[in-house]
Image (cartoon, rainbow, N blue to C red; front, top):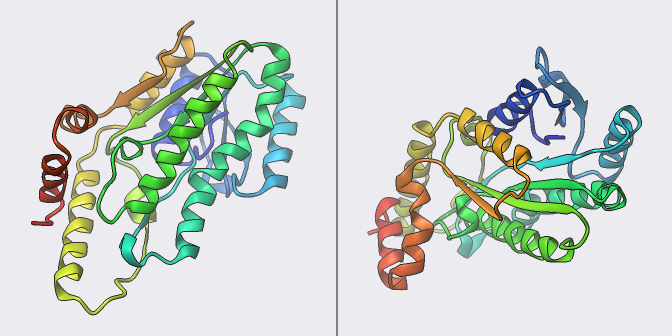
Length: 264
């Protein structure tokens, strides 16, 4: 099962797995967005307990069990961390983090009983380092990282595997679907920096990698008898950033990141 399969990364993942011969269910909040897809469409809202329960019950009834869950559904909220409305932060976490928790809690009892299964939580490179004006997105992905690491420890002796997939920028609908918080302060300097940072992130996304690369990586993960704990996927100049964070002084790393986003 792949959540958020109507476009971008989720569509590429579900399509690639189906092409490999797997029986794939791909979900969307609006199932009408899943027209002419090669996999089985299913309605699912990861923020709604009843919707999750109904979708899992439908698949389990039809197939007997769920072998692989790919938690891909997600969105982005852009805005200043120093004046972020709590409601906007909650909306970000409801999809990106609690949606993952909700899905895992729904499928894991069956996987544990079957003594086999695979959870692939699609995080982000932003789950490994902060980004200016994407604080809530980064924070929600950091939460997915911690949750996944703890889950992996707990499931050690169950036969169920947990892995993280950390994409960089990929071409998708993510940019146009991003929610932007209006700049709330009368501060020309900070407003200029906010505008510059948003322009930089949108430029990076517009020249992002082909989501098919993630689909190929996911197929390799599913076919592997011993998946790695983490897979970084994307262009080298992005996937190298976590390494730079680990070896550079904090001040220098922050300067490099700010420079990229136009915060001089």
